[in-house]
Structures are given as structure tokens and as C-alpha cells.
Amino acid sequence: MYFKQIHEKKLSQYAYLIGCPATGDAIIIDPMRDIDQYYRLAEEEGLEITAAADTHIHADYVSGLREFAERDVKVYASDEGNENWKYEWLINSDYKYELITEGDTFSIGNIKFDVIYTPGHTPESVSFLVTDGAATDQPMGMLTGDFVFVGDVGRPDLLETAAGQKGAMIPAAKELYKSVEDFKGLPEYLQVWPAHGSGSACGKALGAVPESTVGYELRFSPAFKASGSEDEFVNFILDGQPEPPLYFGRMKKVNREGPAILHKLPHPQRITLHEILEKDGVIVDTRNKSSFMKEGHLAGSLLSTFEDEFNTIVGSYVDGESDIYLIIEEANVEEAVRDLIRVGIDNIKGYATPDDLNSWDDKLEYIEAIDFDDIVQLKDSEDNQVVDVRKATEYAEGHIPGALNIAHTRLADHLDELPKDKELLVHCASGRRASYASSFLAKEGFKVQWVDDDFENYNQKVE
Image (spheres, one colour):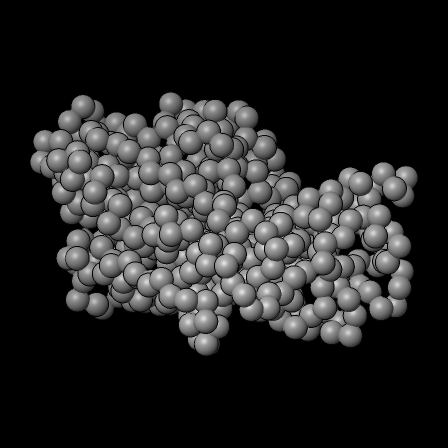
């Protein structure tokens, strides 16, 4: 059996390419939308992708399942859960597909996949037991999707906190508890292959180790240690979950109703800054925060540094319909395009480079940087409002009196809570998240000052 875990760093996502050397057939599990990467890997190994499967309707990226279906690849998708969470684009379509439920089995060459219903993270979530039929009739591991991670389990609150389905999280947590109890009955030697690792917002404490075993998780995962009773588990699993990025709700809808077909990646052209300013779109500046704030930026630009949070920030601040223009190094354009289409940002129309901006003669805009010495002096003025863009759990551990707390990836949904007639003093723990938030708020017409400082410095000043 050929087995490869494919790691996408920015979204901390794992897809799996599994192939049968005897027949040359391969399947891709939980693919992202830019499926050319998987075809390249399969070709390098002498395999042909003949099937693709999702473990559930994803919330954190656009699935590649439909792209594979468009290429006449047979796709497998869950038919579990209630009527609100079905693959609407697939049902009654002309694609080659099979809807799967608990107890179903399908094969790729000599490799068998047994379907296990594992609800809780989502109502339709399934996992796959994988058996290498060329060697044994017993499974060697389990593709757990967003059910079991290394050191954690999938959060059950997203239908409520991200998709807006009120009252869903407690019943979902109870479903997850039942799935956890069933998991305890699996052989401890089974390997666990999750769909995400450390850095994903699909859980609160995912480990950085890429795989585990059933036995290890039962012994050492905090989530399993808290599963002594349903009430204990529900309280534990719902406590301290981070605010989901705003685009999660959109991704659930897109993956349920059907993503737009790409066929190939967008190919933005290099254009002038004058042309960018003439367009009706969003300018995304990928430089570092100091360059953006202190050296200046085009009016109305959004800062999203080309680092690990790049697509999370753009996805949280920009809707899927807007045209996008990038300020980016030319060597990074293709990677940025992949990052953006993975979160449903498809209309990437053009780009200019930081060098173009450095030689720009027209007026640039700036955002003033302050520190916590300034905050101590400014925070009590009626003309100012402190905005804390850290997570709610961080805010609860200590905050500036009177500060409004809105997580930086949720700001776009809470603009009406912010005063337009005051200067917003925007801070986080180090200045990084606050830089993204400050650029977004300035773009939305607020008066903003950016706190470029460590929050620990504030704590020391008030002790």
C-alpha cells in the first residue's frame, strides 16, 4: 500500500493519497480545491487517482471533491446526518458518486475502506478504517477527519458559532461524546490519521505530531481524559473553544451547495498602481506590518502579511464576491492564489510589487503606532475607545478596563458595535493581530491607532 500524508501549513490541513501498487489505483481523502497538486504526486508514484472522498462538509477550506467529480473521478460522500447537512451539489447529479453511511465498504484496488459514523463535530461526519488487503484482513489505521486529532477532538460548536444554527452546540457535544465512547472500543494498535494538526481552528489544543494511535489518545488526550461522563465531557469540550474565523460559515455553505468549478488556477496579471486604484476591488497588501503602517500604503488597503495567517485574514475580512488586487513579491503570486482559492476567494484580478509601491510618488496613507505607555495615558479619554482583538479566553485572563473585546477574525461581523466618533486604540498580545485589525478598521472608515507592543508591558505598568 502506498500512503502519503499531505500537509498544507497555513490551514494546518492534512489530505491523504492512498494507492494500491498492484492495480495502480489511488484515492485522495479530504482534498483541497487545487487538485493539480495531488495529480502531480500520484503521477510521480505511478498511480492514477480513480476516487476521492470527504469525511465531512468542511468549514475551514473549500473541498476539492467537486473538482475531482468534474474530471470523471468517482467521489464518496457522507449521507449521514439530518437534511440540512447533505451534499446538495452531488445528490441527483450526473457525477460518478456514491453516498456512504455507517457499515458501508468500498475498495481501491486491494485497499478496503470501512465507513464509521462519527458525528459530533458535524452531523454527517464519517471516518474510514483502512485495511491493506494485500497483507491482512484487519485494519491498520483510521482516517478520522475532524473527529479525533492528536491530543484533541473536533469542536462541536461550529454549527452554532460559525454557521448560525442556534442551540446546536450542546446536542452536537452530546453526539460527540457518543462517538468518543464508540472510539474507545477500537483496537489500541490502530493508527490515527487526522485531517488537521496544530494551528487549525477546528479544535482548541491540536498537537503538532502528524499521527497517533487509538491507545495513545485514550491514555493521554485531555479530551478522552474528560470523557468520564457525558456532562463532564460536554463542559470540557465547549469550554475555551476559540472564536472561529468569520469565513467558516461561508465555507460550510459553499461545500454543501457546491463550490464554483475552477478547472485551473486564476492567473492575475501584473498591473500598475494607477490601474489598481481605478478598480473597484479590495487591495491586499502582503508586506510586513511595520512597512505597511510606517512606510505607507495605498488608500483603503488591507494588511495581510504573507505568513501563516494570510488566507485566514483575507477570508475573514473579504467576502467571496470581491475582486482582489495584491501588493506582493512576484515570486509569491502563485502560492498566494492557491491560498486564496482554498478559502473561496477566486476573483484575484491583478497585482503589483512592493518595489512598485516604493517608487510611488503619489500620497500614501499611514496608521499611527503607539505603545502601552500611550494607552495608559489615552484609555480614559472620552474621545478614545480601547479595542482588544485577542481571543475571549485571553481577554478573560486579564484586560484593560473598558476595552471592547472582539476577536480579530470576527471583526467584520461586529462593526456596528464600534463607535465611529472615537479614536480606536487597537491592541492584541504582541501587535501582530492588531495590525491586521487596524488596517481593516481604517479601511472601513474608523479612526485608528495601532498598539505595536506586548500586552505584558501593560500588565507591568499597572501592577
